[in-house]
Image 1 (cartoon, one colour):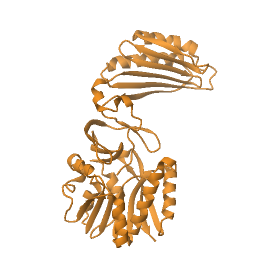
Image 2: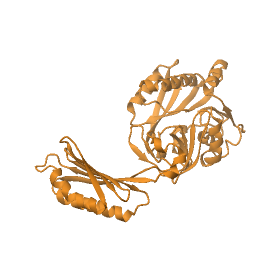
Image 3: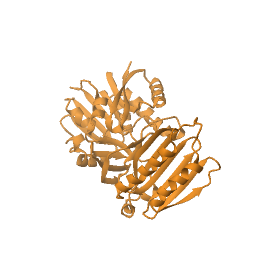
Image 4: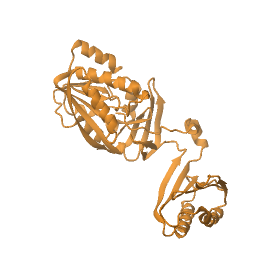
Length: 385
């Protein structure tokens, strides 16, 4: 399973782990005031800012005012204690104060400083403030990158607190990061794959199907989550195809809460793991006429768009999807994750691809909240007509 992107915009300075110990972890706190733009008394920086400066000066911070060409007011502040701050008064009625400090700075002193600024601005802007918001701190420079976007670009902060393991295989970067809620997390190519304790994904993709006595094919799935759940349903035989033996090795060592002991051996009473690129194996199955009752796609999510950079992803999806349907038995089903529910265009494009397959198919989908993705996720079931 690969879905949520984690930390796409990495700072070059901290990309090398050897530098972590040389960098102090910083916290960025943001205080936001929304003011009415239709007030008879809009925010006037000339009369507002001078009353705020003494509060900055009390913290031994000196300011530099920047030219804004009549579009409001911008000043940056530097403190002797290592604090940095920006004060922005926007012409359309937004006032922001962004404070950068260090992780181990005195929280009481920080709160006192921000409280003083908030109290003063409430007095100065009395009658025109429509909303005040103090946002939680963003942490920069930590060993573990805990931020990532949802599929539609909203920021998520995870509760990751420790880098358990990281290495590069022949195919991808692999990270195991600990989460307080979900145990160890497997991250492949900076995409969240699975969490030990988040079983909602497995339950969603497997559904309520009766797998007893059935032949099942899993494409991908090196984390062992689906395989572990599947063997409990007493299938006839499960074949799992995954290209990366390193992911299998690290999963059985660090994420046993999800995979149990199914990855300890490449063969079990009702399963076999084939370490191989799935494409030539699928092609061989098609040529031999080998078929399955269920095929699971654990390779990748649906691309977000038709942009040129997504062409190879769509081509791979299209090719594996068509061959997967070909190896389905007449009553069989192809089961896959898709994308976030909000990615309506991506889902529409995927359904267009379903209409272009070499044989006619029917399909249904369902929406399930996957806790670790922190959003509603869409799953598809596809069958031959």
